[in-house]
Length: 290
Image (cartoon, rainbow, N blue to C red):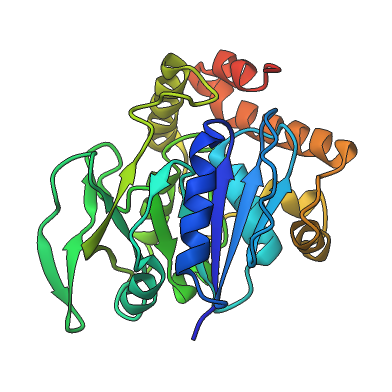
């Protein structure tokens, strides 16, 4: 059975993380590896649970960059790649459900119980699932990023999040997935999860800043020229995959030199993307020391 690499990006609101990790520890098998990627000024202490690792990459902002560090470090061909928000209350059978669903769909997730109406039921490969959400802004189906995953074939094709999308990273994955022939997205029909932090409370960024980040991302997708389905990551220019994997396994901290290099590369990447559409000031705010 395919290995599963689970990333939990953590930049603020880590008060919810101990209970999530404890539940993951009690419900996972040795087929799953859980990595908390701490990428803020707040350092989350590693609880020392088997198969669960905490790695600190310093103050390198954005969810996409944190998840990409994990996937760059730990993914191998044939992995299922998972992302979970750090404030989730997850279903007991999350692991089994992902393995079962990954046999019939390319990308999936768990509906967030407190974020809206259920999507319609559908039948795929003899399994009952729920339709993906439709993005009115991006014009394609996507899996909301609170608790989502990529199946092995799709993960190998997409590789990483497009780091230019400082929010709406689920939209980014959905848009690229929509251009992969035969790729299908769907939700679990009978397992749901809950966001414990309402709206943007306890986020590192202010609510107004988060909304600006979403708006900027939505504007960006409308002006970008056609982009490759496979996206790179800044981490490829910072350290080798072996070095990144060793950092995870040792529950270590990224060196100051590498942190500063990653911040510089990301800032350059975002300025090139957002300055032409008038959002350079937002990029400056993202890199303002907290």
